[in-house]
Image (cartoon, rainbow, N blue to C red; front, side, top):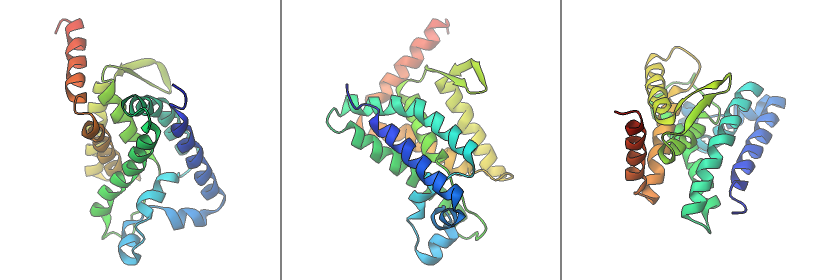
Length: 215
């Protein structure tokens, strides 16, 4: 199955390129970041997409790209299996639309706030992560800083949604939790449009997991 994960590598490479360009020249962060108030005032809706290729610092970039590397390969492989001739193109479309979907959520929330802006691939990465949870809900997710500690993907997903919704409501940090939350939801439901059988397959995997526990 040649070419299965080529698009994911291209996305990672392009994101690193744009991010490092902005690290070296803050003008590009100013020009490309997701900034709802500016988008309304000047019609700069391209920012819904471009903001997803910027990052605040190298650690922010590395964390997102490592996550995308692992889970993006799973999702791109699934798209390639379902659409052998166009899987890579569908995966690219999914990723780009995920950036826009996550940005649109914060746009409607903060379009009247001139001080709000956000950058980062986290919304789209959350979409990829949750698409992988839909495909492989009992797959074990391990933490980078605790490599020997892992939990089933569907449990991690539930905790992630709860935390993102809670922090988005609090709004006390400088993280765009709203984009994370809606990006995750978009990523979970988008593949179902193309393959509705994912829903019973998802439930069957959960049932099998619980059966093995004797529940």
